[in-house]
Amino acid sequence: MGGKSYYCDYCRCFMKNDLNVRKLHNSGLSHTVAKVTFMKQFEDPRKLLEEERAKIPCTRYFSGYCKFQLFCQYRHFSDKQLAKLEEIVSQLKKSHKRQFKKRQAKRSYKNLPPSLQHIDVSKLKQIHFETSWG
Image (cartoon, rainbow, N blue to C red):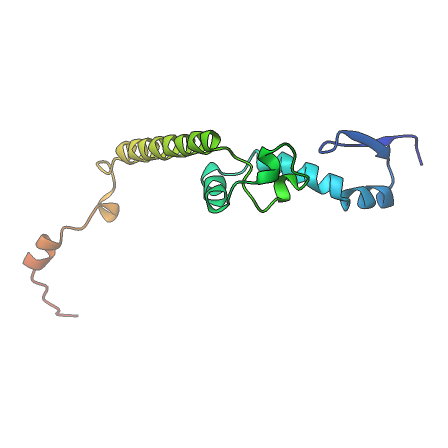
């Protein structure tokens, strides 16, 4: 095999480009923690806020260091950070509502063909159908 090495983007390290070495590395704890840390930044703020509200503060983290990092059962957000996260979520909700209203305003049903226009029920009641076949 060639002398090429494999680079792990999550761990930022090089290793031998061998399937068994990569599998062993990917199943390791340091890679799992690095991957979860990387993916956490793309998580939905609403979901993150719900999860963090349910937790109580981590005494280890706020006294210095928590060895469990993202796998800790307790909250690593301070009250200020939690308030900032709530603010971000509320801004996202407001912008989502504005975007929804803009999309609704853009929809115009004026130029639709007759088969796709809304049916006026009052006009249907006025029509008397005579069913005489043939």
